[in-house]
Each structure stands twice: as C-alpha cells, then as structure tokens.
Amino acid sequence: MSPSLRFRAPGAATGGPYARRIDTTADDLDAVREPGAGAALAVIAEPDGFATAEVTGAGLERAGVAAVLITERVVLSPRDPVMSLGFLRFLREATATGVPVGWCGRCELDCAPVLLRHLPPPQPMTAPATIPDGPHRFGLCHYRAGPGFVLVTDRRTGRERRTTLRDPEVIGALTACARPAPAEDVPPVLIAAGLVLPVAGQALTLPYRLRRWPIPCTDI
Image (cartoon, rainbow, N blue to C red; front, side, top):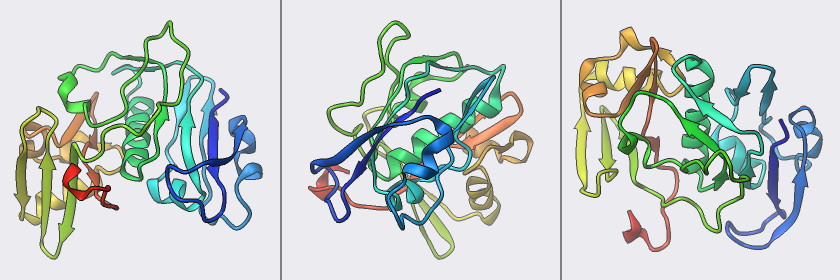
C-alpha cells in the first residue's frame, strides 16, 4: 500500500498551487506531515485490506492535505464490512472537507448505486488511479445540526429532498453511526431513507456534516 498525498504550502488557499507532492508509504505519514500540523493522520495498510479508521476531514484539513491518491486497488465487499465501511467513511470525511480522492477498484456491496453517488466514484480496476482534476461535486448529501434537530439535504437522485430529524433516538443513531456501528441499533427510518448504510451487521452514516460553503454558495 502506498498512498500518495499532496500537501498545501502553509497559508495556501484550497485549490491553489501545491507546495510539493509526497509519495509515501502508510508507515511514514507522520514523518512527512507539515511541522505543527496538529492532528495525527493514520492511513493504515493491513495485509487483508485498507483501513482508514482514524482519518477525519478535520484532520486532513489541519494537516494541509489537498488531495489523496490511493494506488492500491480497493474492493468494497460485504465479506469485509469493517474495511468496506471504514473506507466509505474515509471518502465521506474527505468529501466533507473538499479533499479530492482518486482510487481504483469496485463496489460489491448490495446497495443501490445512488446511495454512494455523493462520494468520489472508483476508477475501473484496469485503470491506474489518478487524482481528479477537481473535487467531486460538493453537497449532494449533507446535513447541518442545530439545537434539537438535524437538517439533511439529499440530491443524490437529481431531485432535492430535505428531511428534518427531531427524534432524539434517530439523531443519536445518526451520530453513533458516523463510525461503523452495530446495525441492530439503527432505527429503520434511517435505513429506509438511505441515510445509513447497513452491511453485514454493521452500519455507517452516509451524509457528511456540512463544514464549509462552496463558492458560489448556490452550488448546494
């Protein structure tokens, strides 16, 4: 496994020129972080799969990561729900921060493709992974949280649907599944709405929390 990351120069605006490109193995990610970057990033290569359990959008942003290229082929399969949902979580977190991710592989999960349309799509297994020219379209499925409610905006089907969640149990389950969690604890309404994806007894929240507004803001 040899992920490739691009780091912004200190103070560089998102989308601006990259200070340098770093090709690195997972083992030395900490060694190549910008000095004083803050959050520790852990992109972990394991013999049986790709684990990104500790990578968050906020961590990518604080470390100045501008793009991620996954050079190892990734297969999302119900036979490995921990790896598969962990990787989808990584894509969700990167998308929330506006960090483009290039990866190749395929999805064998038993779910409607539209449920994952808000995340960076894979390239074919036969194609080398490349970093997209621009970030995946931002804002297709996201939520904002207020006191006692969560507002979800979903445009994955091409039509906008806004859902306001007020039930504390439902909101708690949506929050709990930000990381893969037992599917048995998820209210059926979240699965039926396509907001939580169950895979082999585990479940993951699909919409990302809106952390920044695009320019122009009418894009979302």
